[in-house]
Amino acid sequence: MIPGRVVVLGGKRGLLGMPLTRTLTEAGYEVVPTGRDTLDVFDESAVARLLNDFKPDYVFNTIAYTAVDQAEDEPVEAAKLNKTLPRLLGQICLDHGSCLVHYSTDFVFDGTKTEPYVETDPVNPQSVYGKTKLEGELALADMGMEHFLCLRTAWLFGPGKINFVEKILGYARERDVLRIVHDQVGSPTSTIDLSSMSLALIKANARGLFHTVGGGKASWCELTSEAVAAAGVNCRVEPIMSDEFPQKAKRPAYSVLSTQKLTEVTGFTPRPWVQSLREYVYGFLA
Ligand SMILES: NC(=O)c1ccc[n+]([C@@H]2O[C@H](COP(=O)([O-])OP(=O)(O)OC[C@H]3O[C@@H](n4cnc5c(N)ncnc54)[C@H](OP(=O)(O)O)[C@@H]3O)[C@@H](O)[C@H]2O)c1
Image (tube, rainbow, N blue to C red; front, side, top):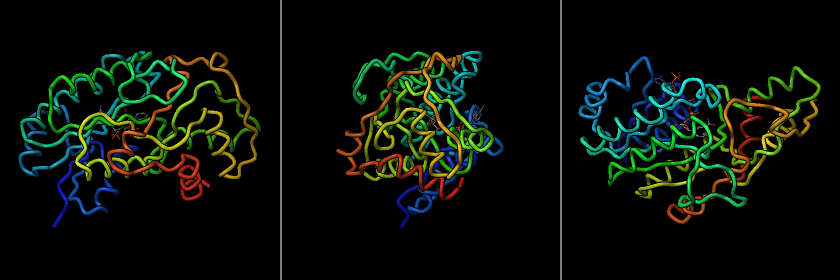
C-alpha cells in the first residue's frame, strides 16, 4: 500500500522541488510534481480540479519569489508569489482536506540574536523578500488550518539548478582571489537533506512551524572556502565585511536556526552542512 498521495508545486524545476519529488517518490508516495507548463497555480479552478481528481494527502508548496535583491524593486510580484499564493493554496487545501506543507525563510528574523533562533522567537524581517515570506506564513497561520506545516529553511544548495555554491565555484575557476562576506552567519542547507527532513515530519504526522536546516553554521566566506577546497580549485578566499559588498536587500547578520524542535518531534538530527556540501561538490560540481 502506498503511504500517501502528494502534489509538489514547483516539483518539476525548483531547486528544492526536484529533490523533494525524488525523495517522496523513493519513499513510496504517489507524487505529482508541477511546473509552470503543467499548472497555473493562480488559476484557482485548475488547482481545485487537481486536488479534487488526485485527492492528495499533502500539497507541498515550493513555489516562491526567491530573488532577494530583485524583490526590493518588484515588491508586488514578490507579494503575489510569497503572500497571495500561499493564502490561495491554504483555502483550496482547507476545502479539499489536504495538508499544506509550506516553506519559509530565516530572513524573517532581523539577525540581532547571537544564538540559534527557535520557532517562538520574535520576527522582524529587514527585506521585501523576508517581509512577503512572513506575510505568507501569517496569512496561513490566520486561517486556523488544522493540517498545516510551515518549514523555515535557509541558504539552500543542491543539484539540478543554479545556486550560491555552483555560482561561486564558477567565479573561483575564473579568478585567483574571491572576496566574500564574513559578517553574515547562517545555516547552509542541502536540498537533499531538507527533503529528508520534510519526509520525516510528514511521517511523524507533525503540524505547525518548524526550523529545517543543515547542522552547524557558517559565514558566506566559510561556505565558499569549503566549496572551493572540496572542488580542488586553486583560488584564495578572503573575508570582507558586508559594507564592502553593498547589496540592495538588507540581510540579517546572524540567522542560524535551531532544529531542536524538529529532532524532538521526529528523532531526525540534520547532519553537518560541511558533510552534505562535500557530497554535493564531489558528486555534481568537482
Ligand atoms: N534558495 C534558498 O536559499 C532559500 C533560502 C530560504 C528559504 N527558501 C525557501 O525555500 C522554498 C524553495 O526555494 P527554492 O530555492 O527551491 O526556489 P526556486 O527554485 O527559486 O523557485 C521555486 C519554484 O518557484 C517557481 N516559480 C517562480 N516564479 C514563479 C511564477 N511566477 N509562477 C509560477 N512558478 C514560479 C519556480 O518555477 P520555475 O522553475 O519555472 O522558475 C520554481 O519551481 C521557497 O519557499 C523559498 O522561499 C529558499
